[in-house]
Image (cartoon, rainbow, N blue to C red; front, side, top):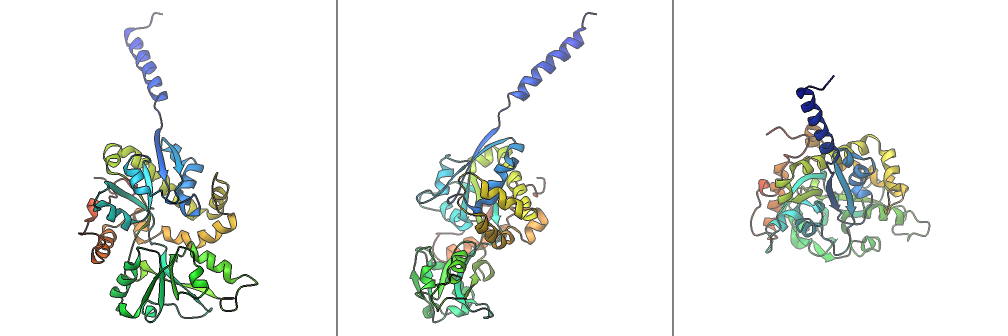
Length: 343
């Protein structure tokens, strides 16, 4: 039987469709980390290792950070499609810098910043408050002094009674008694403190001590950390890529929270990863709660509230770190997140 004209048209259409589907290339995307690949960036590592990016049609690769590799200008220049900003405040400052950078925050790995002022204490000591700064020395990294002053202002502490000194990111000044409080992350330097005080040959002054933290986000300075951002142009021109990327990372966050032991194994075996499984297990105990908030319970992982962005901007403006407030809609959006309401 000779094929009919309708059959020929159907076969022709099917033949054209198959090559079109087969030839559809994955969307390329690179993530510029803020530092070397370690457990801090577990959601990105897990999303790649578990094939979550691939499931969204994304061919993904990780670009390590390190000294001299600021993710913000690198992403803005197109060297990577996504980046992780240590703090959302860095993105706000970049938006109104003398040479402004046009980037947009699209999600936040950590709902509460790990930033804190750490101190040594004996087990059972009461938790510190900002009022404990009075008459003490606070060690901070260069350029971050304004956080101490902001915390003092917001918590009724006389700034004149607080001595601020510049230190490096290593907790040694706290361990040797040079400072009473040390600016660090509860997910990083707190581990160093635990290791040092537990050593058999630890100095008597620190042996058996523990660490306590005055967390910035819990004392009037809320901030998102490891904020996922992209060039504004990418967000406008490739929404499918941005949405798929966030879906993959959000899926990885849920996996880490639901299966932390399996996630530790995945991250510890990932190529180029620099932390041991033991170190990752410690990190996850401290870090995993930071992925969750009341907002993520309602909307899903990576969610961001405009009110937090507005407060971050206010902190920077009050400290004269930026010339004017940056409205939330000028720096962030939740429209690409899986939990966003349809437009």
